[in-house]
Picture (cartoon, rainbow, N blue to C red):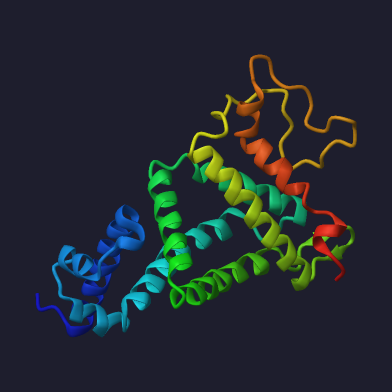
Length: 239
């Protein structure tokens, strides 16, 4: 079957993105355009033709990485949930991502991209703009959800999304890097995170026997609890 020009272009584009992903994760800021093109079976001319520049390739690579990530997050949070339950579902999904067999590879790639953005004054602003554009999807994910008898405004949703991203990225990196203990087996006495938290002095309840602090901090429940704890007036701000 004859391959059309558009199909060949897309095939070359995907090949360059995949080779760039491998080289960037391995070499970081030392990644060479020539090696990326060679690994894809193409020339540097193909990079300039398809992406305009090395930075253009890297931003396309970042978009290709973040797009599916945010799509998965959106699917993990049903539209009908109130704000607290939506945040809990969001945090639990974030924790489950740490168990992905490719979690360490993804983290290595993300750290390499951040390192390149820090070292390259031209790439840094484009990197930040791309990340912010994707984070607007988180704002949209929480905006309008019910909270304290009102709908969360876009301004409040943006403040919450910023706080959640910082919190969950840090916790997730801790799990993947082994800084936080392994997840414990589910305990039958633990309430579901979708239920309103207890107003007692210890909302999380007693720690299951044999579970240390590191294990507790790695659980989906812990991720959910600390994420929901951000739903406060100082974090959300005025409407």
